[in-house]
Amino acid sequence: MLSRISSWISSQSSRGLEILRWAGIAAAVFVAGSVLSVLVFRWINPPFTPLMMIRLAEGAVHLRWVGIHQRSVPLDQVSPELLRAVIAAEDAHFFTHWGVDVDALRKARAWNARHERQGRVRGASTITMQCARNVFLWQGRTYVRKALELWFTALMEAMWSKRRILEVYVNVIEWGPGVYGVQAAAERYFHVPAARLDTRQAALLAAALPNPLTRNPADPTPFLDARASRIARRAALVHLRGVGRATPRKRLATTR
Image 1 (tube, helix red, strand yellow):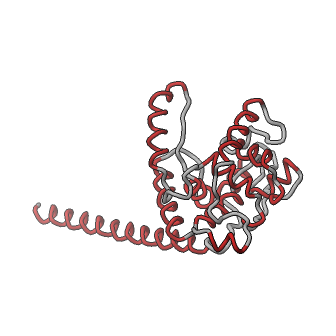
Image 2 (image 1 turned 90 degrees about the vertical axis):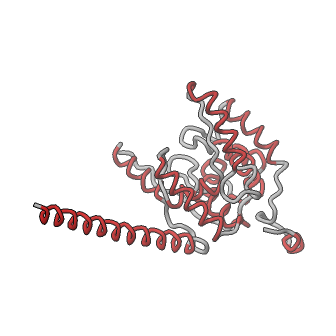
Image 3 (image 1 turned 45 degrees about the horizontal axis):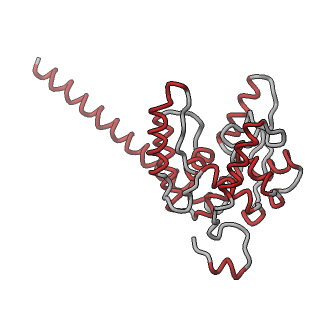
């Protein structure tokens, strides 16, 4: 009897060690793969994102073709007005945090504690976090996805410059059904390239970002119009710190 118990314990121990070994291998592969992916996208633009594939699948389920309208452009070919508007609307402390805005997170928690029962939930995702989510992950409010989002956010802040983070973000963000990136959005809604977006157009595009599938920058509701006006006022105070278009002399004078 004792020998049987000893044999069973031994087999269970071996099985546990085998599970731990495979879990360690899986973790190592994930870490190496994620680091390599972030490193590659430091220089190469993402050809597609998980969200693009998800939207195509959703369209197929509903027998509706949405397509993918997206063309990456260098940050020098994006209107500085758009960059200021996006920063003002989505992440006012973009240049001073390292991926997570602790102050915004604290304020969002306090707001949600007061208004969550009314369904008025406020997020605190930074531009880096949103970029990580769009390039590497999926949408949703799960703890697993949030943990992965923080992991990729840390990698991006460590391996990319702020300029590169902003460049990838404005080129992959969803701006309407099948519309991804600032170039496609500028052409779809205002029939101009991203470089020629003016202050008002930029503010309207930024105002649509929280709900791009239901908000039309080219035909704004009174709410969207008012939100765009607020964003434009805040955007006027944003200093791009060298990530926008600049003369050689100005570029030498700016820092990361």
